[in-house]
Length: 131
Image (spheres, rainbow, N blue to C red):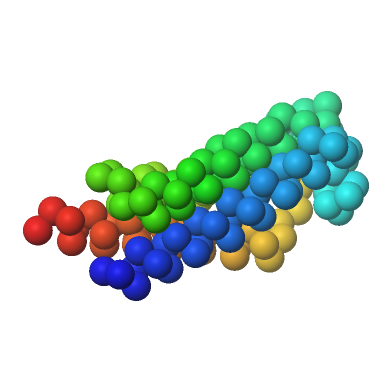
């Protein structure tokens, strides 16, 4: 159980830091060109720029992943459920990206796998705490 919690914490920190950096970059450069993103008007649901997706990335994926990592480090009572939910948020975010963006990237697959891993680790840790 120790290793599952440790791996989940590492995944949450890596995901959180990457999402905070990416979200901040989209907020400071809403055109998305600094991240190599195409014209936002080509998205399935057209946004005038990447500001709103950047804010969602920063808060829902980045900040919440770091909060989940902190709660997991502190062994908060519901930390396994929080890990599971954060994995679902990350996986959902990637699914929305794949739907909205005209191009797919390898990083989307990497973070989708990380989201699924978080859900699996969260489920495993939940089952061990219920026993």
